[in-house]
Each structure stands twice: as structure tokens, then as C-alpha cells.
Image (tube, rainbow, N blue to C red):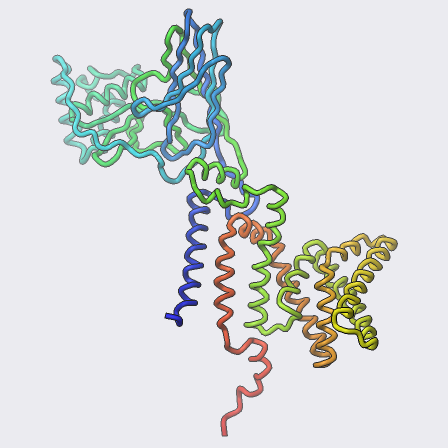
Length: 509
């Protein structure tokens, strides 16, 4: 079991990371690239009416988990009105109430919706075959003839409804002309279709919605037909019999009722306006997570203060830099001074830029190394010697800053951003390697440290990587898994393969 402990741990870390990543990216919609925006629509319903005296109650249908879309935000705009919302059958309604309105009244309902790949609304169970309506003659005979003819040209419930709608649109004979005429409204045609479908015992209902466009005003709701095929409700276009709603169609309410019902008021009017909006994809994803009541947002970095967020934007890249160091040291064989020194130098390069950082780093380490050799002649103990090196490093940084400022080289002021303790330890470590293994090893490790720091810097400044690790911090689990995997590597390093290349062609005696 001990043998499989590490592989199982690595697989568990990767699986956990990818599961959270998939949920956040594809269910909640967190963007995979920075500065990504998401389309959404602001839909406003304007309700106007005239009070007739006394307390007024206005009931208005509003969307409830529309198919293919989701509600991000809602605003109810009214002055001096009480407001409640609730479900009435399949619909959701807003109820405005007031006691003494005067003059024409106008109420507003505004909602922001966005596309959602999956429906959150669950259809009601199959209601079963409906009871056929009782028609008088000649309507009963005409309806039977129409139903028989449509049934003969259809294969199932959906095709039955589409053929019937097309026949109603074309008005091919006197039987259909008894029920519908070309001058009938869409609502009347849907009502007729529902009655004829009931004659075939097929449950159907009327649906009203708004087509979401880039910008439109004074819109009126469109009427659609839905039939139940024993599994789900299927939308049918009443104009051409096509199946399915068009893209970006917002279902507002179900049934044959008017969207506005008034008490002690008259002349209700409702109109809709739509405008397309672009929001930051992260903001949309956060609102979506709240709508979906995702508990992951309780652990989101976006809940922290902005200053703390900015700090973690940098800290989250440190594990990535550490993983790069492990890769370059254990697999490639690059020698560096310490493990974390290149990462901290790479972080400093984010402020000094790569070329200027390398020049300043090389200059300070070279000068500090020369002074370190002088201090070595004084035969100091370890701690006083390290403290002296730290003081010298700070004096060198101060001198370089003042000189660069006086020379007009403002870029040199960024030398203050280097971690002075790391510089002092690098100088101390380099001097020890110089004395024990010679100048070549010390210079080789110094160049290796700079090369690793440069590679980590180039990775850290990538905006996509910065975005991914901040928005999806669970990716750190994959970095941890890779680091653990590299920790078991005991094979040859790439540099050793090159180093011992001469032995490749020799045969054993």
C-alpha cells in the first residue's frame, strides 16, 4: 500500500483540481482568458394604467427561470407602492399595491438575463390526455375531419402539431376556415390550435415571450404554442410550424391570461424594451454563482479586499516558480544558489523588467562578492560576517539608486525592489562555493540562478497564467502534484546525458 501512496495522492490532487476547475469554468462560467466579456440583455417592462378610485392592485407576470436563459438581476421601480412576488400556477407575478394613487400610474420591472446552456426550470409532469372539447355542428364534424387528415400526415405528437399549425396558416379548405381566418391574431390562432389538439387529446398551452435583440423599444410579446409529447413541452412556431424557440427568446409567461390584471384601475398597457449589454465575465460568473447558490464562492479570492487580492495575485505565482525550479534542477540539471532565491529574484524582475534586473543583480552581486572577500581577511565569525554583508548590500543598493538618479537613469531606482537578505545570502553562498570548488563552479551556479529566474519571470508575466492561477487557485493542486511527481525522479538529468555522452559509444571489455 505504501508503494501506491504517492501515485494515489497525485491522482487525487489532480482529480480534485480538475473537478473544481471544470465546475467553475463550464457550469459557473468563469472565463479562461483575461479581459473577457459576456453578452447579456437588460429587459424592461413598462406598465401603465389609470386608477378609477380607491386602493389599486396591479398584478403583472414576470419571468421565472426562463428556458435557455437565467436571471442575473431584478429591479422593481415604483413610487409609493408595496410590492410582493410569488408563484401563481406556472407563472410568477409581481403584485403592486397602493391606497390612493392619483393620475396615470407607471410601474417598471427591469431584469438582466444571460444565456445558460442548461435549463434550470423543471417541466411539470405529463398531465395526461386532455378531455376533447364539445363542439356544436358543423364545428364538430369539421374538427373531426381536420384531425383525421392531420393524423394521417403525421407520425407523432410533435409532427401532428406542426402539420396542424401549417394547415391553419394556409387555410386549405372550408373545414379549417370555420375555425380560423387570415385576419386572426397569433393569439387567436394558438387558441384554435390548442382546441383542435385537445380534440386529438394532446395537451397544449399558450406561451408568450420576448425576442432579445441588440436594441429595441415598444416591443410586444410574441405568442407561441407548446405541446407535450409525454416527455417534455415542445415549442411550435405558430407562423410556420417549426419546432423550438429561436435563439435568445425570453419566455415571459404561460397561458391565455393577459400579463397585467388590475383592481380599481383601467386601460392597462404594457410594453417592453431590450438592450444588449456587455459585462465583465468574472462579474457575470460571480452573480451566476450566487443565483445557483454555489458554495464555492464562499472560498473565492474575490471576496477579499482589493489590496489583499493584489497581494495574492503575486503570491499565487510563487508555487509555479518553485515548480519550474524543481523541473530545471531535477530534470535539466541546472545548478542554482538555493531553491527559492531564483523565485524571489524572478518576482523582483516583475518590477525591474528582465534586462535591467539582470544588470542590477549582476552588478550588486559582483560588488558584494568583492567586499565579501575583503571581509574574509578580517577573520570574522559567521553571524557578524553575514550582518556585515547585509549592511554592505544595502549601502550598494543605496549608492546605485543615488547614482542612477543623478545620471537621469530612473530605471536604476528599481534596485531597491530586490530582496536584500536574499542578495546577501547569495553573495555569502557564492563566496563559499568560490573558495571550496573554484570560480568556475561559483560563476556557473550564478548564471544558472539567473537563467532559472529569467525562465520563471517569463512564465509569471504571462497574463493568461496570471489570470488562470488567480481565478482558478485550485490549479495549485496540479502544481503540487507535478512537484510531488518530480520529487521521485532519480534518473539522469539532461545535463548529465550531455556530460557523459562520450561513454555512449564505448563497449564493455
